[in-house]
Length: 335
Image 1 (tube, rainbow, N blue to C red):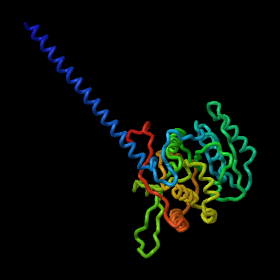
Image 2 (image 1 turned 45 degrees about the horizontal axis):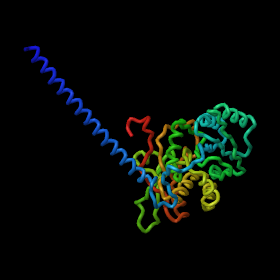
Image 3 (image 1 turned 180 degrees about the vertical axis):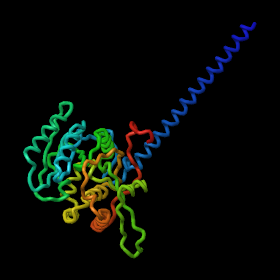
Image 4 (image 1 turned 60 degrees about the vertical axis):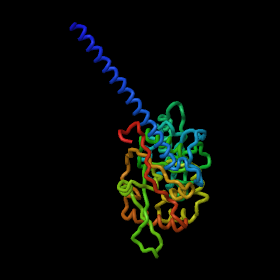
């Protein structure tokens, strides 16, 4: 009797447990489906918001599953009398799997030494992976101008350019992720160093509209940006042609004279062409240099002046502000 009663209790308890477990599984499955649907919907809206699927832009930035990109990307390194930093940069980027070629923008009065040339070529050969031989070339310039970093290159084998200064290093994994983001929006700029502009509302309405340049801390505080600097950014190689041959010569003359703001000029050019904002990619930056134009006093004031002078030359402000940031969720707890 007691055994039978005990057996019935065990059976009832087992049924109750089974029902609870199955119910829990059903709830979990339902929640998973809801989350998947929400993420899918949000991703679609985000793509449209970023301009990746906007139908009305002058140059479409829409993603295309059938889009064909020539394999890999070209690293375009801007350098000036810092051979030790140049060596570190070439050693690092030659090991990145997507690199097809490395071009070094050389504007020094003397050509690179034979020892430097030989060292870099041997380095590239040793660091190249999967049997792929990366092409290394010095692009020599007679004139010392910041515009040299955007001179047209006739025989490029890739659509993508990764423009980088010789004093900053980004992990290859971050560069490869940024390249994948650029492939989804190949007409815009995709980079690691965001900057912003805003309208100076303190001026009277009678005066001409004036804008202020905002550095990193302004981006951090406001959560908004309208430029990614070419010291670490991907863009399509067609912009080298546009910058060299179609952008107003007065802007190139301006950057040569003032030795500043060629990166802002490129941001203006791309935004004016696409009508779309750039895309900021989160990435760890390693500064391996200690000097540069940005370390000089009055740098922000000069950049603000550049903004307003370029607006006057264009006749309008083409930069588009955004709050979107691309994050590699494989390495982030919160995304």
